[in-house]
Each structure stands twice: as C-alpha cells, then as structure tokens.
Amino acid sequence: MSEYRIAVLVGSLRRDSLNRGLANATIKLGPPEFSFDLIRLDDLPPYNQDDDKTPAEAVTRFKTEVSAAQGLMFVTPEYNRSVPGVLKNAIDQGSRPYGQSAWLGKPAGIMGASRGAPGTSMAQQHLRNVLAHLDVPTMGQPEVFFQAREGTFDAEGNLVSADATKLLQRWMDRYVAWVKRFAG
Image 1 (tube, rainbow, N blue to C red):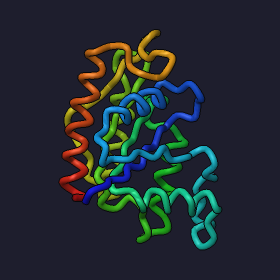
Image 2: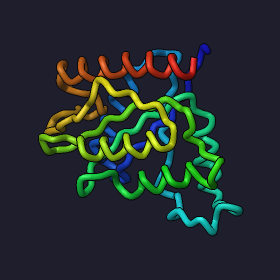
Image 3: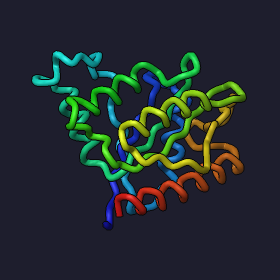
Image 4: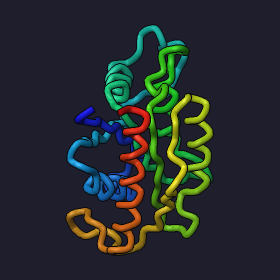
C-alpha cells in the first residue's frame, strides 16, 4: 500500500486542548505516505440503540471516515481516571449496530497529555480494554504519558523540547511499523 489514511481521534473538545496540540505535533512527524485526518466528535449525539436503524447524519459521516482509515490514532486526556465521555460515545457510535463496527481489525496507537505527572495512564488503560473488546490491535510500546507544561508548544504548535520530539518520533516510527504490519 502506498498511502495510509489514519483517523485521529482527540478525546478533548477544548479549542486549546493539550491533546490536540500533542496530536498535531505528532502528526508532523509522520512519513509522507501517511495522511492524518482529525475526526470530528463534537457533533455526535449520545449513543441510543433506538437510533441504530436511522442514525444521525453525523454518525454516518463519522463511521464512514473511520471505515476509510487504515489505522487509528487516539490522543486522550484523562477525566476522572478514565476516558472522556465524548471519546467513549464516539467509540460506541462506531461499534454499532452490532455486527457493523467501523473499528474491527484497524491497528491503533494511543497517547495522551496532561499537566499531571501520571499523564493519562489510567485513561489509556481503560481505552486499551475497550479496544481489545472491539478487536482493535493496539500498539503496546512505546507508551506516551505526556506531561505538558507551560511552554511545551510554541505559537505554531511545535514542540519546544528536543527530548519530547525524540520521544514522539520514536512513538511515530513504531506506530508506522505497527500500521504497516496490520494494514499493509
């Protein structure tokens, strides 16, 4: 395969989200044969099984975008020691109706940023559990529990720290190999 489309799901809706910044900084490190599409989550209605037969236009768009991707990149904050509701709702919308999951077999990578030292470790572990149930092969190493501080990103969204850039480049290199292994 010469081109790999990656669906990027950021679990934060905030305009100046640390995780959106982390996603954008990481995307810049990808190889030319990879394209990264930030998938919109904020317009998805709460999942309701009653809507399975007539999904909202936003749900149809979302599932089409995820289905078209060869890989998944999750970048999530941690809310109350788990994933944000907006991300869990998107996962539920993409997995339904039963037997029509957009996630099935797509290779995934997970990372997250927070101001706290533990990063997003609990949210990532919960996300791994959900993705395992959905038969999404998820890269285990390297893990990125990114602690973002004031001045982590410059005005253009680039990482300021060379060490942080090296960490994310190592993650991206491994992620590229992971996607090619499953989607190539």
